[in-house]
Image 1 (spheres, rainbow, N blue to C red):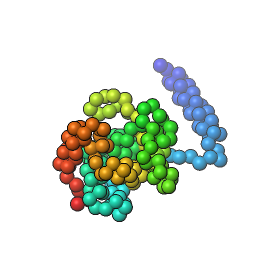
Image 2 (cartoon, rainbow, N blue to C red; image 1 turned 30 degrees about the horizontal axis):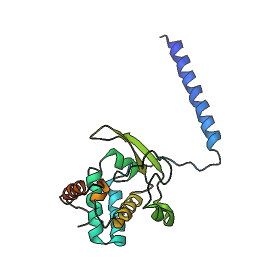
Image 3 (cartoon, rainbow, N blue to C red; image 1 turned 90 degrees about the vertical axis):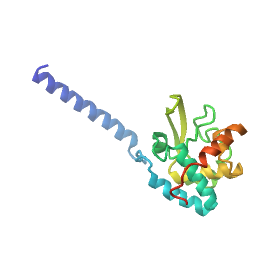
Image 4 (cartoon, helix red, strand yellow; image 1 turned 180 degrees about the horizontal axis):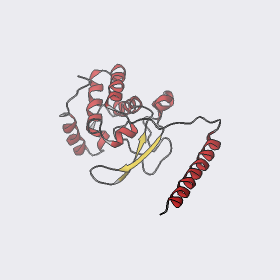
Length: 184
């Protein structure tokens, strides 16, 4: 490629970018633009679990931390970083609010700051299956949702994993081996 051709390509790229930028500006002018949030971190979980401790008590918050740690690979999974949740999947193929869930809807309606803000689809780490997770505005929203669900299920963490009693027991055994570092 000659220098002249290279310069023509550069100019064409700039024109295309300007054109796209102008279209985006026209579409968003006068509208509130929501920018992508940085990834959620363990520090976000600290604040959320402390709020859960105030609402549900220390024992319940400690259980919530163990579930969160187990489900998010100690707050390092991509799914956690992008959704803030402990793997809260949509129900069926329902990708619109309330995403196939019933229990936490009352919490979300009474506390709009906890209401999910969309979904995130990604391959699951261990199986590679494509899964769609509910995306929350904050880790606190996800933790309060988890707390509301488990409270309705008599704080049976295994019910987060399965409806089968044997599977629930195995899950609870695993969860109880997770070491708390925030709520102790």
